[in-house]
Image 1 (spheres, rainbow, N blue to C red):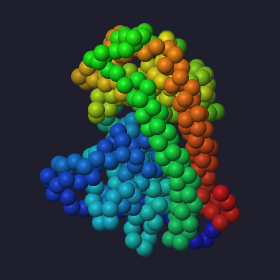
Image 2 (image 1 turned 30 degrees about the vertical axis):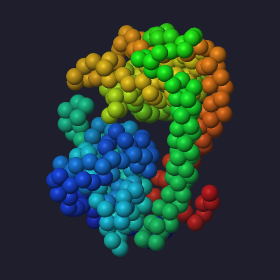
Image 3 (image 1 turned 90 degrees about the vertical axis):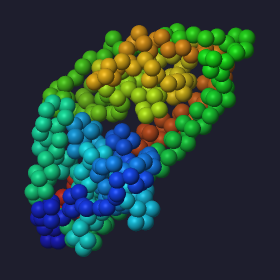
Length: 385
């Protein structure tokens, strides 16, 4: 570690929950917690909404979830999508962190927040009832950080930001690929269950076109996962990637549909994850493949336009049961139409998977370099992308 590095109290380096002014009733840009992607810097989606409370932020700020399991699931993001001078707001469960002028760099503050050293302290500080535990901000404020001078902070932040920009670019390309696949699906299959159908088309149920592989699921506790050393296989929950584990129970392409917890989005459509390779799934997601001409990709596109809010049960813990999922009415087209669509979109999904694999490589590179760069173990000038 070079002599330019020093130890500083986090509250002297980061402005926690800085004061900003928004009046109740103002229409402003809102970032909902469920719109943040796990372990992703960019905020993918916002909305205009009436401000009635919540965390306030502006460009250059970092927002970090303070509640379980959102923090553990990597819901920390960098705000850069607002207009100049604009103030946005979001969940009351965000901690907002801002660089101090002349002391800290905004990008460096973000990478401090996702550094395992900082994250682990935040997670271990959580208190409260089970399922509603929250970070103790006071513990973070007293944490001692090792930081370089401002110029070196900027160099480190810029270097790591270049990796994240490559990830964000692939994400944007993949969003476009999915939009193309969905547009084609609507052109190939334009009929709803209330429409008059052509010959060979019929009304059926989801149960006819899916295979459910839930019986192969094996629950893993957080304690079990913590003990694992070689954590290389994705571990998925109802709505997102949650962790990595040392073994797998599925190998291939599957569609995950949230079973309980987070099961529908704001518009009532199911929470879906298109996954492939070797992985583990917990007990909170249905694991699906297709039948009668539906492959995983066409099943994915069907569910993206099939509202399921009416089959959700449970006021406290929303749930989509297997029986209710099977009962949903859908239009079932002839198998040859599905085969034609599947063949047409396979190149789109092949590129999608390749881009996602590249993102995983970039993410692994960033996660390997980040703690070493942020501690001074590696000099950023010695690393080339």
